[in-house]
Length: 64
Image 1 (cartoon, helix red, strand yellow):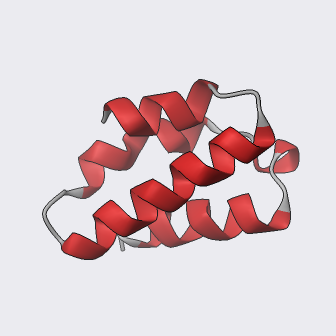
Image 2 (cartoon, rainbow, N blue to C red; image 1 turned 60 degrees about the horizontal axis):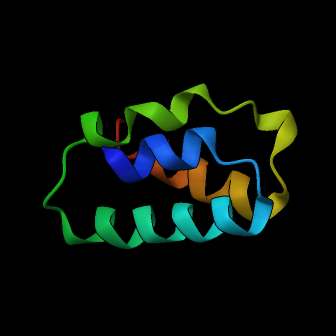
């Protein structure tokens, strides 16, 4: 959850994208429930580039 919170408040695009990538890797393990990724729901999609949006969409898809 700390990593998801860091992604939600990070202002540097490269750092945020790397953090979102790390979250995606963690999500792939299946060890973390969707509640651990909750902070990224607060990211404004209009402020994200295409790659970041793909990571966020994939993480939010875990909830479905």
